[in-house]
Image: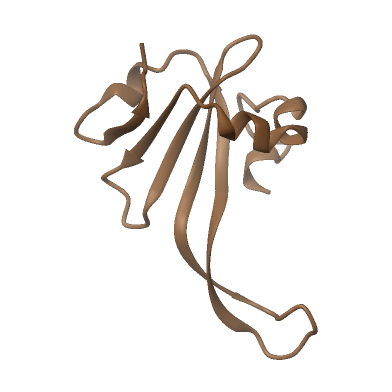
Length: 106
């Protein structure tokens, strides 16, 4: 996965990945990126030592084999593409790029 590759800078802690549903249920903020051609939500998370973010692509089309095997089929899914620790969340406050859907960046 892109977010946990060895070369990733500012990796999110392993504890986040183990408790992912819990962290996603209580984000600090959810932003909609208005600049991406693919619909994407950014979840800003409160972590024990700092803030972090996850980027979730919405309605992403992929080709995948059905569970029983066979020919690949087109499916739509939501997927976490990347994530990282944030030194600060000032870049997320850019109203030309991100629209605040829920929560606060303060």
